[in-house]
Image (tube, rainbow, N blue to C red):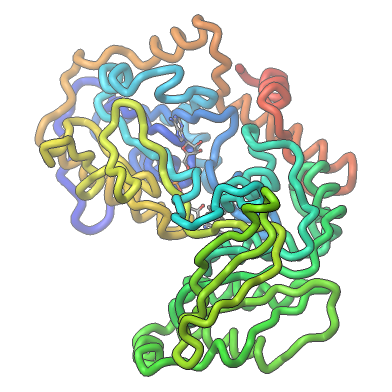
Length: 462
Ligand SMILES: Cc1cc2nc3c(=O)[nH]c(=O)nc-3n(C[C@H](O)[C@H](O)[C@H](O)COP(=O)(O)OP(=O)(O)OC[C@H]3O[C@@H](n4cnc5c(N)ncnc54)[C@H](O)[C@@H]3O)c2cc1C
């Protein structure tokens, strides 16, 4: 453990038993931190995952055209390879096992269930066909087992609401020539769908001025390098208010973002077949199309001084809401519905009375909401594990109190559940690489649960 490490827990005569629920980066780093802690009697960590495959949003969020980011998978796989860590995939806490059962079987349970759905957006017309949450589109192009297999890409112009990195991912994947995705792991049907897209223009729309855009400068600049796509920025959108200037002075990232936007504005267009327009200070007020029963436009009000209140309609046929991911409540666990997180203090889950619930912890996006990158989950894991070990040091695990978690997994299997272990995941991995090699691609993702389980059974258990 790093600085401020808690005292090691007193020996309990057997390893500490921890269940981590969720195998995204926060969950896997939690397992890694626990096994590296050097506990006197050791530790056994079971990493439960509802899908048959591990790694959460690293597999199903990080864009397929970001292969360098996807490479973090091998670091995470090394953690799962540790002899004291066990992958227990295909087990949904809530559907297959309850939180109470886990709390009875383990000394500590760490919720690392992330965020997988879209934050709600109050906007007239938001429920019209053709208006989707970004997470729905992302799940489709990532080949998430629970996403639809086809996607309507008949819109020529689309609006993306939000000015964060997910909005950029959505704009880039929609606008990028489909041939570029042949170098990635996207399922064949996704490549075919994107190849048939009618798209010409993506309008990324931000409510506030460019100084408040949450893009990372690197990802923004990357957009400018996408072939056959012009990035269009109206210089008038970059005129800052005095508050905007002050904001930039104290925020280096925001300055780099505005500089990149200025670069786009100066560069102008090249006549490329597709355009991504980055628009600021436009407050979406209605998704148009009630009469037609489908999206026909987006109405915005200009928020910029000089044009304040001016109505501007964009003639789009689809709208994507990229205004943040959100967690779903977990059966049996406290949930702060306002913030969409499991309430906690330094990773200790708080009950209704505001006091920590013994042996229950949270880490990653489930506890913070959708803020931070994969790299940040490692630090989050250290913080939660520090709280957990501090508590264990104060109240050592009773030698015989927890039922043996091995029984729990055996019981799940005996009940007919397909539990995928590490060998099973490795077999899925190998099958995807082989499917890619057959068509000259590095990997092609398997999509359906049944195909994933069939591949897992070839080498491991499922
Ligand atoms: C579209 C998108 C693109 C992104 N791109 C990047 C990027 O390029 N670079 C970067 O650094 N970061 C990126 N991020 C951020 C990154 O994905 C997150 O920081 C990180 O994944 C959060 O980790 P987590 O472990 O908390 O949650 P998650 O990755 O969401 O993992 C949670 C896991 O818990 C499982 N789970 C949920 N409920 C249950 C249950 N009841 N029982 C069992 N298991 C359960 C889920 O299936 C999932 O596997 C992106 C995020 C999104 C949404």
